Length: 275
Image 1 (spheres, rainbow, N blue to C red):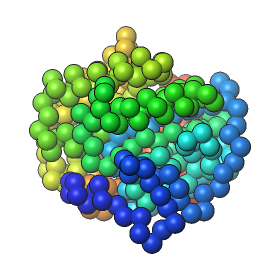
Image 2: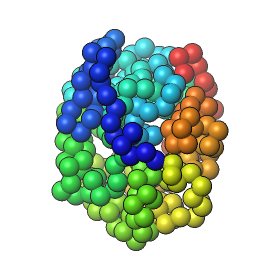
Image 3: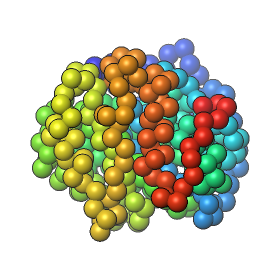
Image 4: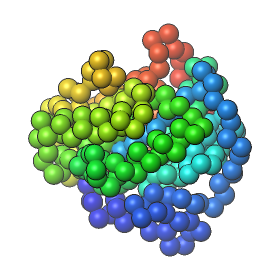
């Protein structure tokens, strides 16, 4: 992974703004809508991680369902479309296609996306007391005024493989972060993806220490569940630069997350217009 390239997205030439962590706060053409009332058929997804959880895919997506797949940010709601507010970057992402799949399948009537994703971030920045942990807790508390988060989707690990974080250290930091989120009132299941492959990690073995830690984390008693293995699902040919996703990778990412989080009784993913 070229860390400098990943963390240095410029907003020059765009009528767009970002916060001190690089998270997008304004982007031209966003359609604000009234925040809908949630019910038991509303999925509220807190999506967290580094660049592949943010706006770094080279395929831009829009919702196929107008006010039914929503980007919630800073107390306001917008029709979901790349790039999502709350995540770093100015390109595409896989969460809007995931929202489309969840609605098209009939599993949910609405999907609310709450992105907190910052490129090139190691797990240590998300642990209790660290800068992005404070941001994450702030987002949880802010969203609680309108929504009860139903799923946390964690997609991070590439930076830790670069830093050669050990399995015990990654596991300890993740559980520390989880504890801080529970203290903030979060009760939703936390889904952990296996994700470590990114230049210069693209040739790393699948049993590397970070992936091993991610695979060891699911624990029903702590409401930590297995997310997708995107190291295995998304090939080098699905990545435009050895790391970030082209269209095929974006669609595989969304489909893998769909399969990971849908109930066993769930329907079949459907790709729709506006992928």
